[in-house]
Length: 224
Image 1 (cartoon, one colour):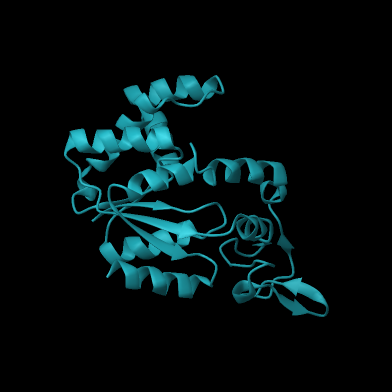
Image 2 (spheres, one colour):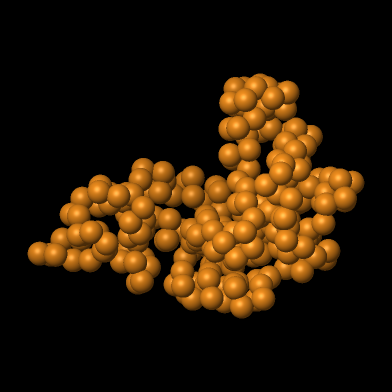
């Protein structure tokens, strides 16, 4: 099963991607990891990408798409893959679709996690990190994982640690708005890419508003 997954920052896309990965037993491929691995290993494409990155420029699709296809051809993708983080806009969607067609690779499903922009923003800004374990989920805006309270102070809901902090980038409204501006753009942005695929493959829409468990259950029921 070859799948693309979309969802704005704050939608729980990574968490739901892990659910899909487990169901189908396919690798969860993130484009950021592909870039880092190619640069680290000094591949031809990695060297070209690094030149653009070092200049503070976006890596062209002519480099990114072949890099992704090379990853999708690796042995662990033989039974399928879940691609996350690409495409981010309409032009990239068109380039990826063309490349998949030319490579004889079928795209079976596209998953779209739908979430209101303001809710997505609050979820990002509501994240709190536990000093004991950053993987302990705490978010002041999500009822299911709100921090607990002890002696009038917020503490980790998992271990009770009273040192909860917010990442600086999670509080940068300008940066969040910029990322979301690209995602929610229906003309040339990420949502435009989603609409492009809706005309070509089955797109499974899932409401990202409920809790993680409810979203996972809804997603799995639609994938069956």
